[in-house]
Structures are given as structure tokens and as C-alpha cells.
View 1: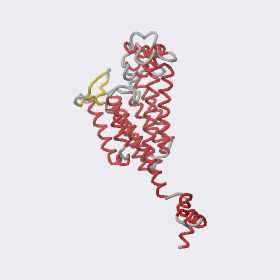
View 2 (view 1 turned 45 degrees about the vertical axis):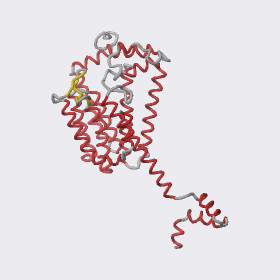
View 3 (view 1 turned 60 degrees about the vertical axis):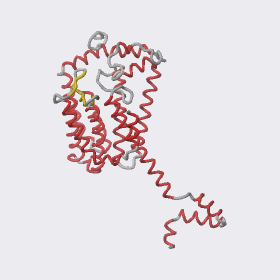
View 4 (view 1 turned 30 degrees about the horizontal axis):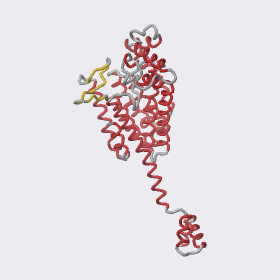
Length: 357
């Protein structure tokens, strides 16, 4: 289903999304509010899902793409005004702050960090003055520390991560088993379907899927997986640099950053480089909302890239045949080489030809 969604969205001109950016943003806010007002479905100690019939929707995942589309539209529309505090910085900070508070209320600390990272990066790329980020970064860092220090479960998770051997049977059970998975795989891995840590590692199909990849395919498999993400991100950045307008450029940058940051964070958590946080591995982890949102995002990214290719082809077609082709056609028509040479000169000097007329 995700692949079909990606192919369908890749055929839709991303420019047509502009009128829907504000409604999409409003829908994301509504879904986030519903998830924390008693209608949300709890799991793992957090109320992050909405049950809509047979499927569970994770509003924070939908909000990541919705926020990228809205910020890209807003920044592209304001152009040079982004250098003004009241136009380029404050409105985007307020919206990102709202989503951050809603994520923390669920609670979803990892989702809040990703949303803030995407917002700050897109504003910086658009040309928002970097000096404005300094005080906000200091305040945000302090508030983030307070949110961790005075939330007992978060602080205990940090302490368990720092001393996994001591807490390997309780609070650090999951990251410890994840590290064991990587160690079991060694260089070449045990082979597809031959891993046994999947029997002991919680969320092995979701947040810790990279640990199972490491066990079954080894460090070589992890390196290839990371290289694939590097390739996707680099192609996304290339599409952003070659996009036909600022809106498409910001979308491509935002989606590339979204995929890259989340993939890097997921693998770092699975290797116990970072403390445990509930972020999926893009396009790999099992999960309806995450997988569908990732596929939709990749579809939009493909369309941004395709629009540039189609634009280049259109421009080449508008130029008509090259001088060498024109010369061949003139010669075949029965005229001499001199006529062909004159045809090439006329194509190379359109201004002179216009003056002669």
C-alpha cells in the first residue's frame, strides 16, 4: 500500500499542494489535540495514536510532513521578508512551539525534537538571521533539560543508559538486548531469518529493527543500510538545489532532512549511542502511520525531482534542433554547404537576425 501511495503522489504536481498547506496544518493540529483529549490510544506509556476504524494513526508522524509542507510554503512566499523577525522567524517559531507542546503532552520527546530540528533547519536554509537562533537555542536547551530532569521516567532512562550492565534486567533491558543483537551478528551476520534476538528484543519489528538487521546481516548490512540512506538524502539535496522554485527546494530539503535525521537517530539508539527514544527507521520499520507518511514524503520528493527533469526537457524542445541537425536537413534538401553554414550562423546570432528584419 505504501509503494502505491508513493507512486500516486509522485504523479501529482507538488505545486498543487500549495492551496492545501493551511488545511493540512489545521488537520494535523486537530489530530494532535484529539490524541491527548481522551480519544487517544495508549501504548508504551504514551498516548500517541488515534484509532480510526481498523487502523491506528499516529498524529505526530503526520505532523512532520504537514509541518514541512507549511513551512516550505510560508518561507517560499515570503522570500526576502524572511530576514525580518516578525515575518521570517516568529510565526514559524510559534507554530513549531505549538506542535512541540502537543508532542510533549502525549508524551513524545523524540517527535518534538525532530519537529524543532526540521523547523530550525528550514528557516536557516531560507536565510533567517542566525543570531535569532542563539537565545531561542539556549532557552530551548534549558527547557529540554528540565523536561528530562523532572520527568522521573525520562531521568531513569538516562541513568539506565549510562550504566546498562547494572540495569540490563530492568530499565536498560531493551538497549542491552539491542547491543547484544549487533554483537551476535558480527561482521557478516547470521543470515536472513536466522537471528534469535528477535525473541528477546522488545519492538524488534519497529523502533529496534536496525538491531535485527545488524544481527542477521552483520556490520556490512548496517553499513549498506546507512549508505542507502546517504544516497537517498544526497539525491534529495540535489533535487532541492535543482528545484524550479523555492517552494520545491524547501520541500526537498525538509524531506531529506526528515529521513536523514530520523534514520541516524534510530540507528544510534539501537547501538546505545543515544538513550532510548521512540523513533522509527524510515521506510523499514513496521508501522502503518510511519510507513505511509514516509512513502507519501518520498512521493512528494520524487515529484520535485521529476518537475525539474521535465522542465529541462521542455526547454531543450523549445530550442529546436541543434545547428548540426539543421545543417544536415538543409543539405539533404538540396542546398549547398554554404546554406547550411548560414543556417547555423542565423541560429547563433538571433539578435543580428532580428535587426536585419
